[in-house]
Length: 137
Image 1 (cartoon, rainbow, N blue to C red):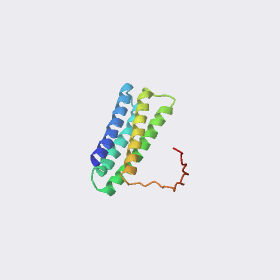
Image 2 (image 1 turned 90 degrees about the vertical axis):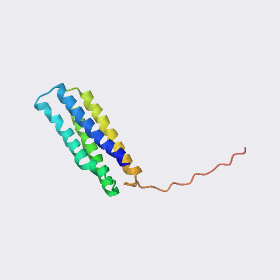
Image 3 (image 1 turned 135 degrees about the horizontal axis):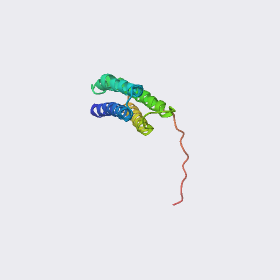
């Protein structure tokens, strides 16, 4: 499990930085360099904080690392939404939309691992029993 978590974690960091570099290189300028900041901060959080935790093998550490990676994917997605709703962008917004899709996929992947691996338990409600019907054949 930790190998897969590490791949997902580091993969999201690589894609985020790659998207930011791609967008920056489309229209390089000092003003446009601000799009590199969320990706670099997210990659630092994923590689330096969350990454070692999810690959450690210690269950408590893995759970916390997944929670951190989930939060990073939400914040990264929020930065993509901010870029998409901005009235002007020097680079194409399609690449930011693809980054948003990847951050959403990262969010669902990290939260799925939190639930499936038992780090988070969802509340359950008792379901009523349904009536049965006897068929004549």
